[in-house]
Image 1 (cartoon, chains in turn brown, purple):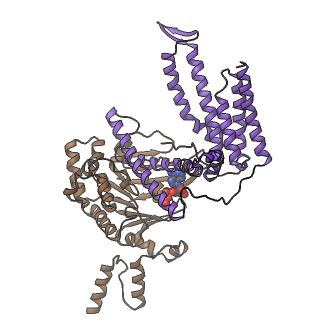
Image 2 (cartoon, rainbow over the protein chains, first blue to last red; image 1 turned 120 degrees about the horizontal axis):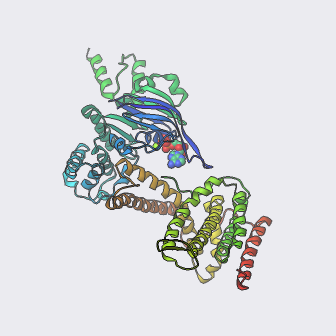
Image 3 (cartoon, rainbow over the protein chains, first blue to last red; image 1 turned 90 degrees about the vertical axis):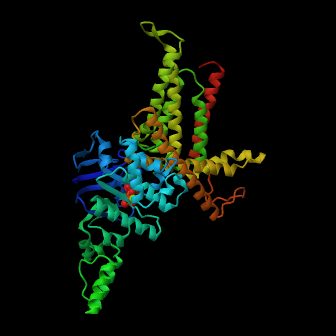
Length: 284
Length: 268
Ligand SMILES: Nc1ncnc2c1ncn2[C@@H]1O[C@H](COP(=O)(O)OP(=O)(O)O)[C@@H](O)[C@H]1O
Ligand SMILES: [Mg+2]
């Protein structure tokens, strides 16, 4: 599914005294089948951008191509429901959207809403829950009884059950403990590798972005200041310095190794990959 | 979903912004009472002129006001329908195959609409130009005579201002939840009755959860900063009436007195 932003601007509370331009002149093409990270400071417009992907927000000017759908400014857009089934959006703190009395019902709620039969909806709910690692013992529990991390995973299952082609997640790991965050990242990566889903993910964690994403969109004050391969972004010393971007631990580590005279693979992304290279070198 | 504009403070610097919050609150209360006194039309012209002045002096954008008033118009349309069907007094002004519309239905609806609109304009001019904290002080001031009978004025004023403060916060949260549920296929605009009910539930249940959570957090935060209910609190900023505040009070008080006087003498 093609994702193409053309001269998108978005103004909150347009025509009101506190009108606020949150996005200006965004041009963007997101690659299919890849994991794309969206990074930038709080208030840089990441969440606003992401809500355009399933037409929750309609641009104030410009247009967005999303597969067969064309979303234009100032137009009544139809068929949004079909679009929202193809682009699954997981909001920041999605645990707040749980409301059914059992976990299974809550996950099946989405597919039923989109007109899928009850039977299949529950089938999908079960498989989505098992994908996010929620055990069947919990299916009949009330969502409010779960821990924060579990609630988060149930909420994500609620979107996975829609079987979207594109999965968009707004800071999915915010507020989770490191272990919970790691499990979530593994899940996201496997959704991409095994089920070939296009993933777009807002993140504050540059380590995670560096290790697992293909492309990065770097935003600042409602504008895109970098869009391209993640590795190239973190190799661009000037850009990093100018924008006070925090370097990923792996990049720092690679630099230190280089200073110590080791040869390090440009494309190594994780500590494991570097460790392997180093141990090969030592055993030589 | 269009965002709620009612009750929102707009940080600007207008004549109204610089008035004493107590004077503004008292004036609004006086005028709101005045709105309900007349039963003929002419006095409403005076009240509408006052409303116009208030909007002008608040430096508010007309579009902002219109957007705040829009819900009233829907309410009035509904009321008009009910009145047309049920109110059968006055003269017949329209008749079609035995179906008749009486003049009172229109007059009555119009009167209620005018009253609601005026009330809303006055209160919006107050809330848009008064910081929540100042509003608390003003409410506290108004309630202060009650403290003689051991009424917890400070606490009640605090409660009212927290409630006001939370309207925009909760409406933002509501908007977020609506968006999240829309992403799950909920259609808030159309559908059968049962779909509508479940759409409503998908908003209301999370909103209550959030409201309670926020309330607990706020209580903890207040306690952590040493707020003790019932304890006397001091104020960092003393409020002081100035001449313009007295003028505002004088104007609104004379409108109210005039209306009461004319009413008692059967002038309207
Ligand atoms: N519902 C809203 N109404 C008005 N302004 C908003 C709203 N949501 C976000 N904003 C403003 O838009 C800007 C971008 O916000 P957002 O997209 O949430 O940024 P990020 O997700 O990168 O933190 C911010 O300045 C924010 O204050
Ligand atoms: Mg955000």
